[in-house]
Length: 377
Image (cartoon, rainbow, N blue to C red; front, side, top):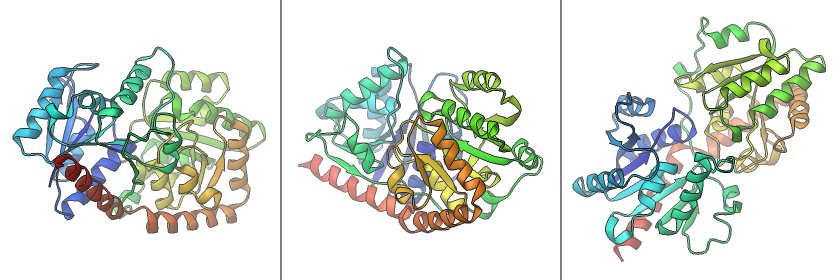
């Protein structure tokens, strides 16, 4: 079976990590994956492209303009037909929109999309327009995969009986030894050597990640006498706003924004606690990586996070957009290292037993076969 994975990647974040892990595991199951990377003219090689090639996964670049681009859609479909692709698997707005509105009789190649999570975007923003188009294109897709049961309660999916929606939870591989290594010369390691309690997070610096609430939680901790600092690995449109807010709160010396880091998960062991402050999520890969690393987790109860953390038995859960609750949960782990250790051990057991790459890849293979069979009928 030949599968074309289509993605417009903005960095190595959750969806990219999941996709590369899935494609790597699929080869062991007899699937021939190809990464179809959407980019712009003159754009340098993307991290997902270089990482895929390093893993021996074929990559093809499709050039597209911003917004709907019929020529790009035609190029993707033409490639799929010429290379006898059995199924197109899209990841994210761009691929969904480019291909989702193409009538099946014209596309002919079966299509499945994975919903990694919808973001809460401002009205009249470009992201909001993309989200509306993404939702509208759902009706033309043969099959939809949600990465958590919690996503089924989101408005576009709730009660959508015309959609074939299945849940396949994300999976990851255990960390290799080299991923656990710490670089003593790195800025994050230097921050760690300060002796402060380090709160850490990995993600795109965007509004839906709730980092402003995390900053407010840090302010509350420091005001209460805690020697705490915050590291957020990633880049994005909210960077300047986060820096500005940190300055206003007097936290400039207590926050580190090192930007995008290749293989960011290897830094998780520098954190005393991993904090997810998101306002919306699917099933975050970064939390799975923190659980594997044995770093205790504090997270907002959004998307698939409550199920992942066993409703608080494998990590502390707090309401979204509640800095006081975030601060109290972090303080609890600061003061009770026994609890932190117990949560970490339980989290490691959960992620190793339930969220493997093999289980995810086998579930997708079953979904592929079902879509192809229904399409042939």
